[in-house]
Image (cartoon, rainbow, N blue to C red):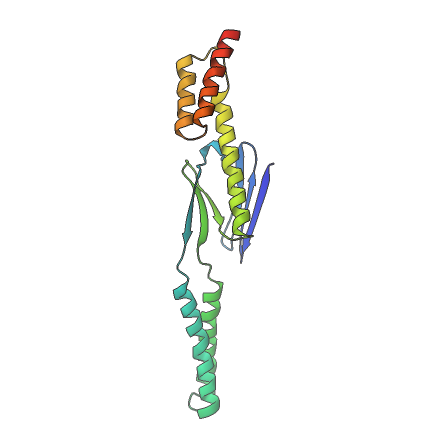
Length: 193
């Protein structure tokens, strides 16, 4: 195991465990529990942010809190609402306010670009810790792919190995300098074998 990121928001829970060859994801919510693993070479290298606009939700919450308070003040000062109506309205409006407060808005970071995506809460425990974990996943993914494609077999034709090197350079897994160094290493290994 290389690293673990645990995230809890309300009743929802996400745990990502990074190994050298896979990521194990555990999610729990009030509706279901999932546990699955993703092979590291199936992941991408780009991050994408996605968040709901929370302003309408905040306005709705404020309105749901102000209406029952206004009704209580009106009943206390003017006695024009009635106790039964006041009680029903307070329960309804405070219930809607509670629902609005507990409803979770989306504020996620996605790791995309591969066959599978990983989803993280953006700021739990902190945005920097989430980004650091994502960087570990990206580094492990690149290292895994580089190890897979750079393994030298004397029976591998030069064209195939150079095609692998070229693909690694095009996908920015290796730099131009590393590309040239691996080509020189190939020539040396051919001479020694």
